[in-house]
Length: 64
Image 1: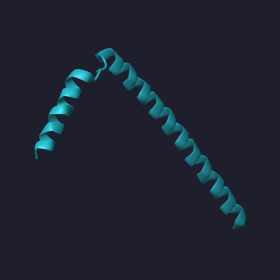
Image 2: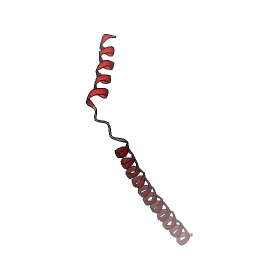
Image 3: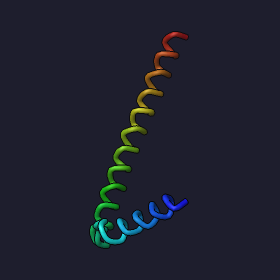
Image 4: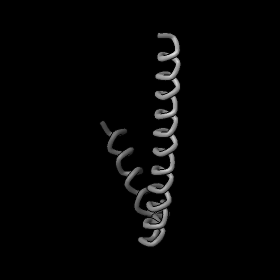
């Protein structure tokens, strides 16, 4: 149990004294970048799904 307590103390010390936290402006900028990348990725996946669905419908219509 003493090892667990030491681990918690060291983890807290590292988070408080050694980690460099971003400023509020940096956090907002990186959040916007992530949201834009997410939107682009979503649109790409939607486009591939839509195209694949239409190709398969076309093939199934040809086959009968």
